[in-house]
Image 1: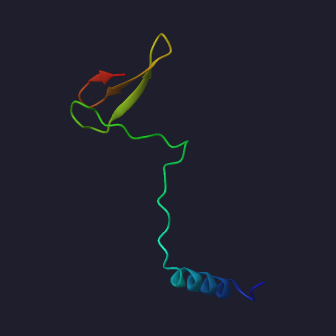
Image 2: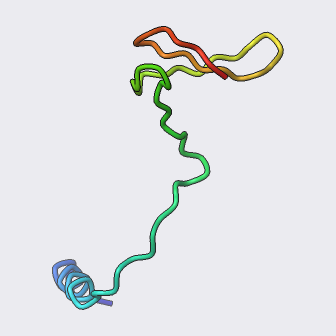
Length: 68
């Protein structure tokens, strides 16, 4: 166990400085929602709507275009 927090920080920074291997590419987490862009205007101001039959559709709050 390190004698002080400063020694532990120095040790961790030293390990980080030595490691030059690139990290593997990350993929989005399963619980992170994807960002959608409106196919008409390209805006990212998109809201998800639930339909009467349980389906999911989207509406752009910038231009009003809706799609599913």
